[in-house]
Amino acid sequence: MQIRLLEIAQQELDEAVTYYNSEQAGLGADFLVEFLNSLERIKAYPQAWKPFTKNTRRSQLRRFPYGIVYQLLENEILIVAISHLHREPGHWQDRLTM
Image (cartoon, rainbow, N blue to C red):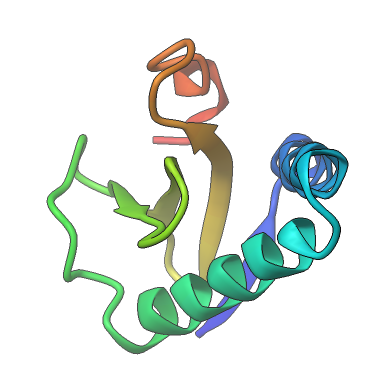
């Protein structure tokens, strides 16, 4: 199953990487590696996380306070948001397709 990021989710990822790099050299790269590892877990076990709605779930990054909000669609996993867990909860809900 393919993984696709909404453009706004890609922007959130880029902003998080930039922020962590500004806090400490290399920390943004660590964040990106953790994000990619989480994507691999989602791809391997897409239904492992508790659903918010019928097709929407959130996987939490292990080292950083972020969640990957995604939807299981017919032929792909759609990444809806890369969401900081302590800021603006639910800000991504208007992006849901189902």
